[in-house]
Amino acid sequence: MIAPLGVFYGLRWAGADQFTALLAGALLPAAGAVREIAARRRVSGVHLFVLATMALTVAVSFLSGSPRVLLIRNCWGMAALGLWIAASLLTRRPFLYEAARVVLDEDRQRTWESNWARYAAFRRLLWVCSAFWAVACLADTALRITMAATLPVDLVPLLDDVLLVFTLAVILVFQRLWGRSYLRRNGLRIRGVRISALAEGRAEPGAAGAG
Image (cartoon, rainbow, N blue to C red):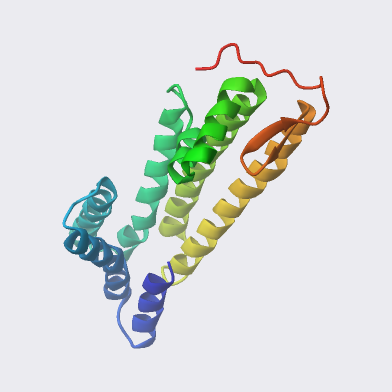
């Protein structure tokens, strides 16, 4: 995030035109993806996505001759993430359930799975928070496109990064405050990844319907 921004404003300060400065900053993520491919000797879906979106953005920008096309490069990732999360709402497990399992160790994975099986309120919490992630990512995408189309070109790269921080902050604050409040209303609390009852007899596990 910082490196492309530094390259853009550094080149603009040195006298480069907007298109050249944006292109140089945009190529950094692609260079990083190529370097990782060379180091690991395998291509992941993330690498392919970065390289494909970069190639498409650069090609269209050359055809149009407008630096504003390069400004929308950050929209691809947020749009893809938002659509992927939205699609997960149609599956048996929402995005946040699966994403947590990826980063948890085996013991915590078992606790996470137990929470899902035992507590209907926990399942609903993950569905609602995943939906909020999807809406936030797609709203972020719309704002990025609007900024790229209407605001001064030299201002947009900075605002792109500010918007990313803001979007993530809104998501995490909502997830923490609403999530904990929702669990409390259902007689539950969460410590780490473990769900427990606030008081004996107040929370019903609600295992029926677990998918």
